[in-house]
Each structure stands twice: as structure tokens, then as C-alpha cells.
Length: 210
Image (tube, rainbow, N blue to C red; front, side, top):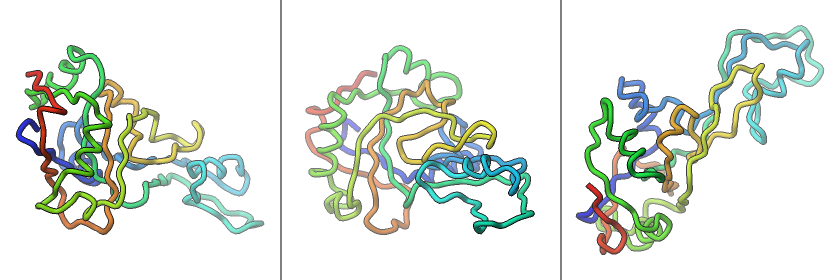
């Protein structure tokens, strides 16, 4: 980063990482997804049917009004945020604690760069950065920076309805990462899974901690 470039990847890349056997705290099969497991639901349990889908989203199972004698068993419904946002990720918190989390165990992380102001830096990337010498806006129609919220993203239907999926929601098992994200929303499908944003004035925005 101090040389003036950052890596961004689509959230689908991190889903594939776990499928391919990467460390489970880096890869995440439920990245940008929430799911609910249904052991049994039928016309006799309408209160459970109302929990199948996240608030404001069409449910994965929607029998016709008045339908009788139907049931579904042992099925998992998944819900995914539209499109496939790309992200640049960082952590926000106590440096000593985050170093233990991010650089300990089987991690291959061994360096840390502090971002002086995450909002200003991500705005600089979008408006001044370049991807393959072209403006970032040529690839991405919009972007947003924010903190990740943590919740149970995989539920049994008896536990309640699944949360609305999105690029700023992750499972509670990742809470210790205290992640902040810069999400970019593609104008059109991108046939790669890695891009570099080149930017100027690195020292104005970044400090090498170790």
C-alpha cells in the first residue's frame, strides 16, 4: 500500500476461498449471504413460513394463497445481496489486540499500515485512483465505506428469520476482526477476481506501523 496501490476483490472470491480449504477466518462461505434451515414447515405452521425470508425480501418458499396439505422438510434457503460487490478491507481497533487476531496463529499477515482517515482515503481512491490507467468510476458505478456489523447469518427457522444480507454484514464468529470495508458496486460484470487501484500521495493517507 505504501507504494500506492491497494487490492480489491469481489465478495464471491472469499466464498470460494473457504470452499477451497483456506483458513476459515479469511474465507467465508456466507459472505454476502444469509440462510435459514427448515427442518419442517407446512400449511399447519404459518408462523414459521413468515420467518423463511429476511425482512423486505421475497421468501424462498411462497405457497399459493389457500393452498392446503403441503409441506417442506430438511431444506436450507439462502439469500444473497444483489450483484457481487468488490471490497477493500481493513480493521479498526486496538493495534495490539488486532495484531494478535490478524497476525497470529496460521495467518501469513506480517505487516500493518495505518489509514489516517478511512473515509478520506476511500474517497481519494474513488475520485483520484486509477484501475489499469482508467478512472475507478469507469468500472464501478458507486461505492460506500462503513463498519461491518456482526450477527448470526445462518439460523434454524425456530430461531427467527435470517438477517438481510449485504456487504457490511458478517457472522459473529468474525467479530474479533473489527472490520471496516470499502465496497464498490460494478457497473457491469467484471471477468476477473482481482483488481489493483493505483493512487497518489500515499504518505498523506497512510503510516507504516510495522
